[in-house]
Image (cartoon, rainbow, N blue to C red; front, side):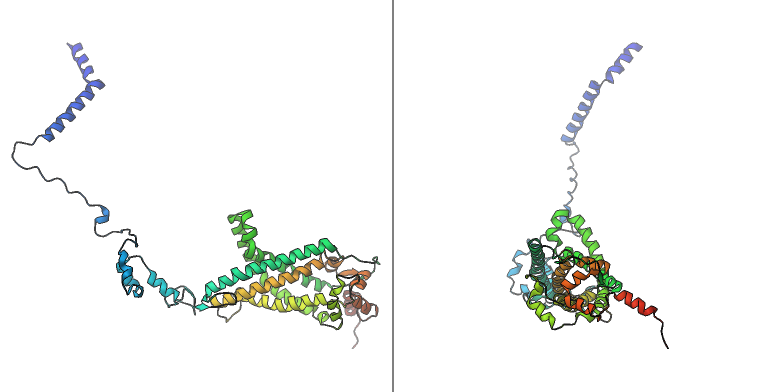
Length: 406
């Protein structure tokens, strides 16, 4: 008997029997629901269907402004509607507000005085731009004139110097060096020149990358590296600017004495310094070409570049740094710096690979007598005549050591 019960329980617990039992139970429940009860009462009402969230009142609902009152534009006063009136027929259409912004209507913005509240500047026409708002006019001048033509000028200068170098080569001495040297630059003169030259190179390289880098550098190194590079160069540019300004003033007054025009300069200019001839034109310590760089580049363009750059750095007190003033300063700075770079490229060429002994003169301060006689004959003659000491540093040291009389 016990074996019979145990065997029966095992059969009931088998998967097949359990599955059959579950199916029978499901069928019974379904048939019971399908047969109405014999109570004679109606079935209870089915549960209410919840409306979609979009049809319920309240909440955030998305909408396409082009599908809401699409015929609103037919209203004769459509263009005169305020932003609130437009919001009733076309929610989200803020055209009236932006139309007022474009007109220069005063509102609120985080801009400081005196431009507080004006997001878009008034209309103006700069040289080379259309009559449009000042921000767009500045963009047109910069992108349509300064960048393309300025870049072309720099490229022309570089190509011209390259062609001249490969065609003529370095200007060498015709005679042999004597071994006797003349002090051309004192230590103070060289220090002032090198400080100014290094600051200029930093400013020139950073300025070229910031202005033209997206055309020749960005496609090569990619946007990430280019972004970090321009950010670093921008900060170097801002810090090197004041150093360049101070050193330029020192350079101007240091070399002013020997850069005054003389009658011999006219002859030098007419013959281009003998650059395309067989002999050089006699000149004093600085020839007419160097004087043009001094007065045109160091003084005139230097004054404009430094003035506009200091203004853009916002280090001048008691000045209104409005967007219009900054835009004008930016355009002036861009034009002046490109002209200065083009002019100084020739000066750098002649002071390095363009002329034998020129770089050594600025590095050590001394030149051979042959160099002085061939390139600055009038200066050499004055030294030989005793009008100018051949070694100014030694002469100054000797004069300071000489006993003083009461």
